[in-house]
Length: 354
Picture (cartoon, rainbow, N blue to C red):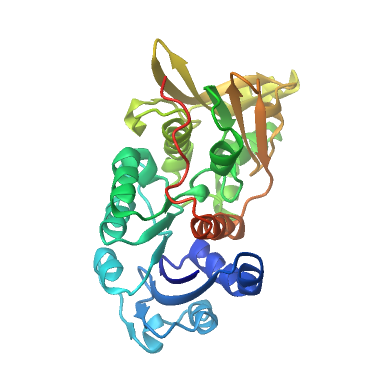
């Protein structure tokens, strides 16, 4: 299979994916018979480029690394506000990789971009949680109607195959509960508070490390974790939740002395994400929880994430991802492209509805 691909978003994740596309091209061809041409790249601040003959990815990476614009490339143009949908329609691509900025409270503009890509008959691989949290059933149905792929492995735990394991490794199971620690920033903050830092100092450290935004509310108020548990509930448990359906509480008002007191007693506070079945419905929560030190979720430190599936056959299947990075997120998108080429067209199937 040969795919013409477009990259919508060329930030840390988009550039990591581009680097992996270059690095892994020989492996993709040798192992899977998969080749590709990058026919377009669009950014919010560095312009865009469309070239049906192929964009020089190495040159694009070098330009952006120097702070220059993609407009310098053949087919390049300046950035324009809200040009994402136009780029999707104009770029001659079979597959759109989407990794733009997302508002986790609304799922936009990623959900609109996902809808535009699928409506145009493009395969879609997204790293954004919004389309799955806010419009999973609609977009899955649209992908089936258009006979294109809709993949999103990197939406939860970066490149760890938490959705791929559910899709490929758990056929026919009944998932009763999902439980995990899914937000790196809050986990890092809580660990540093245990070690003696104030909340403000721990947050500043996460911001300096690039793990937290200047406005950290999406993380510390639980929005990022909420969107992730909604993705897992919708895809793996067959729910139809939205982030506003989740019982959400962040860590902003958790007192440091309580966190440190728990640690001294051998327990640990975590921003715990859960989805479970109750009275024929799937419910979900995100809230700080004091966990005993023997709990695997209590033992994850720093940016490490963990998720456990509780099923009718496998009592507890736990996946841990250590030290994620833009490269691991980019790898999840690359794996999605390979799975699309292998014929797994529409992403993870709903495993159980009752």
